Length: 414
Image (cartoon, helix red, strand yellow):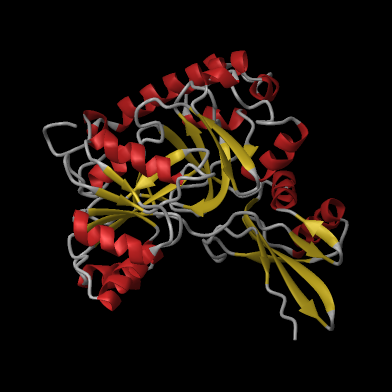
C-alpha cells in the first residue's frame, strides 16, 4: 500500500504509462498462451504478439465467448485446452454455472480483490465477514485472498445460517462485510429480528448481483457504507467503486474494451457495448479478449478520487440478444454483417414485433444516406443474411437508444 492513500502507485500513473505497460504485458501473455496452451495456440495462430502496439490492434485478436466455453470443455475435458499448465502446477479447480471449469494458482491475491477492498475503506487489522460461498465457485476465495492481501483476517461465513451468522457478528465484531447486497440486508434484518447487536459492520464490499440505489441508501441509513465491485469467476476483479461513487474504476491488471455486441470492434466512448476483458497475467489459465456477455459503457475522464484508470458505468444488462423470428434464429453477428456491407450505417437495431399473429422485423439504422433506394438495398441485404424479409427505417444520428441493444424483441403475447 502506498503512503498517499492509494493501494499502490500504479493507481495514479499517467494514461500513457498505463497503456504502454499494459500492452507490453499483453504481448507477453499472448506469447505465453501460444506456447503453453492448445486452445490458445490454435486461436492465436494468425496473431503476431509483436504487432499489438495499440488498443486498436487488439481487434486483431479473436474473441473468446464465455457462452462457448461449456461446450468446448465438454468436448475436451476438463478445460477445453485453455490451460497453460499441468494439473500438478495448479492450486485449485473451480466449477461455475455453465458448467465452466477454471484453473487457479495460489499466488498471493490471485483475483486482485485487495485493490477493491482498499478502495472500499478496508485497512489492516479489520475483520472481514465473508459470506460468499467457498465451495464449487471461486467467489469466497476471491474475497478471502483480497482481504488477507490488505492485512486483514477473514471469518469464512459462507451463505445461509443467518441465525448462526448474526451470533458470530455480535461476538466477533467484524467491521467489514463481503458478499451480495441482498444477503447483507438479510443479516441486518435477522439481527434486528433477534435483538442482536450487528452494528459493528460499517463497511461493505458487495458483488454478484446489481446494487440498487434504494438498497444502498437503506444500508447507509443503518450505518453501513456499501461499495460494489464487478468480477467474474474467470477474470477475477474487473472494476470497483471508490468513495466518490462515480462509476467503476477498472482494475490495473486487466485491459478492458467495450465492443459492439456481436463483433469485436470497439464502440465510441459513452456508447453502450459488450465488455471484453484481457487479464494481464501470464499464468496457468490465460484469459484473452474474453467476451463476458455483459453490457457497459466507458465514462469520460478519470475519477475525482485521483485514480486515473478508465471508468465504466457498471453492469448495464446482457449482450446476448439472439432471438428466434419465424422459427429461425437472428443474431447480433448477422446485424453486424449487414453493417459491414453498408459502411454508411453507423448504428443498427433490429426491432422484432408481433403483427396479426405473425412475427415481423424492422431494421432501424442511423445512416448518412437516407433515400428510399438505399433503404431498399439494405432490406435486400437483411433478407440475404437472415433469410427473412423485413422493413428498413432510416433514422438520424443519435435517434436510436444508447442501450447496447442490437436486437430488440418487443413482441407481446396474450
